[in-house]
Amino acid sequence: MAAAAAKPPRHLSREATEVSVEAGSRGDEARLDDDGRPRRTGTMWTASAHIITAVIGAGVLSLAWAMAQLGWGLGLVAMVVFAAISYYTSTLLAECYRSGDPVAGKRNYTYTEAVRAILGGAQVKLCGLIQYANLVGIAIGYTVASSISML
Image 1 (cartoon, rainbow, N blue to C red):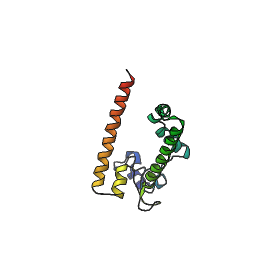
Image 2: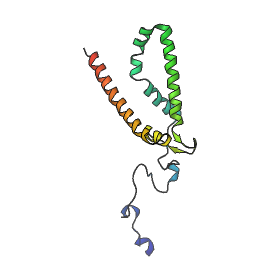
Image 3: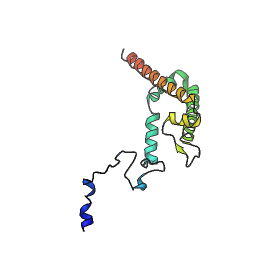
Image 4: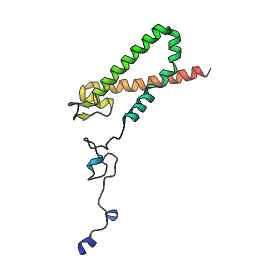
């Protein structure tokens, strides 16, 4: 009983504890993935919802105008072509999620990590430059489009 009294309760202990999201709770490996991050809890429904919200964006707002400009024939062909391109780029992105072994390889959480793991070298800086240029270009495009629509 004296040994139990010598050790303070856990909530009164002064030893450092890790409380970051990445660390999870110590001793609870069931909540951590194979890479040490908290286990993801997404389902097919949540993944589908994220994909739909990503795809249904500003492009859908201009779909009616594009179809009016191209007509039914070319409009449908353009939609099928761009759907195929979207599918192809999605499969490429899915293949880049893990580098090395597709089942147990290191996960790449960002585009830059995927480029670093697959290409390496100067391509990482080029990827970052292209990403930031794309971000700036999209911001300028939305600003111009919204200002034109206000007239």
